[in-house]
Length: 70
Image (tube, rainbow, N blue to C red):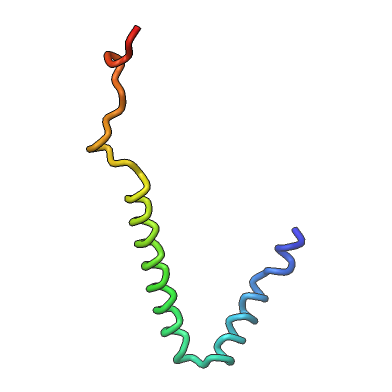
């Protein structure tokens, strides 16, 4: 409840207005474009790390019930 009072919609309007005044209207699209490219590169990096760290299902088959010795 306390955070909703601090971070309300009026604060968002003030922050956006401050950013526009500080950087100007022309810099906002450049910033958004750079932010999108950074996000895309981060996701591609996470995908490549996931591919490297997870074993491939083609190379390693799970043990079957007939493989167990009684």
